Structures are given as C-alpha cells and as structure tokens.
Image 1 (cartoon, rainbow, N blue to C red):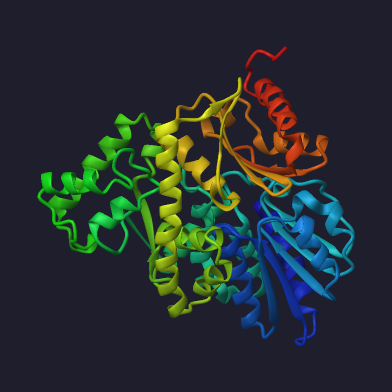
Image 2: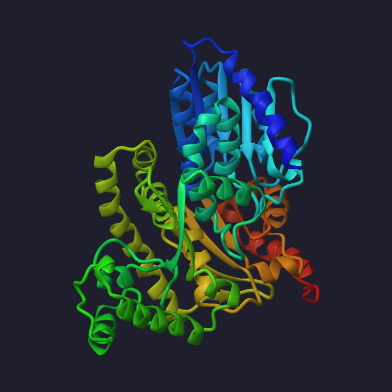
Length: 451
C-alpha cells in the first residue's frame, strides 16, 4: 500500500535527521537513468539539509564495488535503485543503511540498522508502478515537503525505466498528477524529437528505432527531400503541416516493421516539460542513460544537479553513445540473432549498452514470442542482460527469477524485474548458462520441456 511507502519514508527521514550535520552520507546508486535520477534526488535533498555526501554510480556494487565499501568508514549509506536483492551482503556492513529499491527483494525482514523501502513490499508493482527515483522522491518529500520540485527527476527515472509503456500508473501517477497540478511539469502531446536538426533527430533515433532510417544518412535525406523539408531545419521550427508529415511517415515505418500497439502508443503520446530541467523528460532520461552507460556517470549526476557546462558536454557524449548503439543495431539487422528454444540472444561489445540494445531490438525489430538476451564476454566473466515484453510477462515470463536461479546455481549474481534482468557468471560456464536458462524460460512461457 502507498501508505506503507509514506510510513517507511518517515522512518528513514527520522534516521537522517538524527545524524549530526557533520555527517557525510554515502550514496550508492545504479548507473542508468533511474539510478542517476534517484541519486540526484537524494543528493539535492541532503545538500538542502546541510549534509555532505559522497556518491558512487555503479553497475553492480556487490562484487568488487562492495569490497571497497566494506573498507570505508561510513556512518550511514543510502542505496538507491538497488540493494533489495543483496540484503544478506548489505547486512555485513556495520553502518546504518537505507535501501530504496523496486527490484525483487531477497527478504522482507532486515537487521535493525537497515530500513528497506521497496515498492514490492508495499503492495506496489515495482515493474510498472514505481522506480528507484520515484521512491527516493517519497523520502525527499518526507524530509521536506518543499522538495516537490524534485518530482521532475522522479518521473525522469520512471520514463528511463520504460514505465510509461501502457501509461504512467500507480505510485508514479500520483507523483505525476501532483507535479502537473503544482505546475512543476507541463503536459503536451507529441513525438520525441531532439532540439537540433530534423536530420540529426531521425539519424540518432534509437528509441524509437526506425528500421531502414535510423543511422542511414542517404535514406533520411531522400525522405526529407520527398517531404520537401530542409534537413538542417531545427525541429522546433517545423510548422504544423511539416510535423504531421514527419509524424505520419515515422509511425507508418514502425507499423510496417510490426511494432506492437503498446509500443506504437509510446511514440506520439503525452509528454512532460520540466521548467527546472529545461527539458522534455524522455529527452533528459536519454541524456542520463548516455552519460551512465557511455562511460561518464558523474556527468549525468552533474546535470541532475543543474550544471550547465555538464549539460553541453552531455549532448556531445550522447551522439557518440547513440552511434555505438546504432552500429550494433545495424549489424544485428544485417546478421540476425542466435536462438535457443525459448529465447533469442546476441553478443555485444560492451556490457553497459548490451541491455539497451536488447530493449530496443525486442521492441522494434523482433516479434513477441521470445525474450532477448545480450551476452558480453569480459575477461573471465560473462555479463548478461535480458529483456522481455509485457505480452510475455502476462504469459508467465519472469526474467528476474530466472536470472537469480541460474546465477545462484552457477555461483554468480543475478536478478531484476520480470520484464528486464541481468546476471554475471564465470565465462567458462557459458554453455551451462544457456542450457539452464533455456529450461527455466521454457517452463515459464509454457514451451514444451526440453529433453
């Protein structure tokens, strides 16, 4: 129940306010858009209360990252967008701990020094109705009601985690409605277009991914010439007629590629403008993702904290990041995917973007019959990211549970959501991973058991 989130947030607020002003808080968060937004909310909140903080944005802190944390002398640690799946490990820490998470939890009861705010423990669906940043916002509001301006970052995180697919709902919707009512956000209907030229907006479009157009210079120039639109024209300068032409053609492209209705509904949809961030929220989420997964996590946090120079730097980084994604997507379009009985998979060059590519490919390039796995061979480890669809989840798919079971069986780490999850295992266990995962996923989505 949402009331439980409020009560837990009040409890965590009291823990924070009980700390001396000389306390330096340790904030640890995930490195995607939701994780960076959540960290940004906590850092702004702590700063406003007069506290210092030290932040780390990590892919997975529970291996090498955790060892560093164990050796630190922290009075209090706040985990955002992670932690609930690793309670046993966190309980080894001697400090006070606040966990703010929406992933599947390991257990509900913890040691007295730990407060766990997890959506799934409060009757809120962590897959679709709340995220790390929206739950962090609950704590920020419990600390000071004037932190309502941070609602923009809360919804950025939800959008970054694709929780707008099917419409923003649940706890996220409560935050969104209040933010619109209080004029923190402004709603309008439109297509996701960048601030630059219409050419660049289509060329670098990876989500949505327009097969045969995204990353294809000649095809875009041919299209714009046909529509009699100057390729260098700024998206903001398009008149209503030109905008309708572009919208219709791009939407038709997705329909021809067989995109499901719930994905099509996300292309031209309600969008939200933030005065404080000076951005449409999905565009801002894209920037954070580019910073986090493009190798400059601190830059993403800086733009959440309002640094203008960092914002300009992030725009340049985003182009490089999207080009990497485009290169892999174009290669997959050309060469296709590998396949097991219950899932498809491919090998990616970088673990930081493997899951991103998987999420795009399953929504814009594949049908809804099987989930998609990205595998990255990195030194002596395999990094696996997997993505499903709402259709598959409704038919029994639980990737988080599958990754947790297989990784545990192979002495690795794994977990996540039903629709998106990940794992890390030793590289010599790759075949075991593929076979064991195939058996579990086959049972989940009712494919006849492998013999």
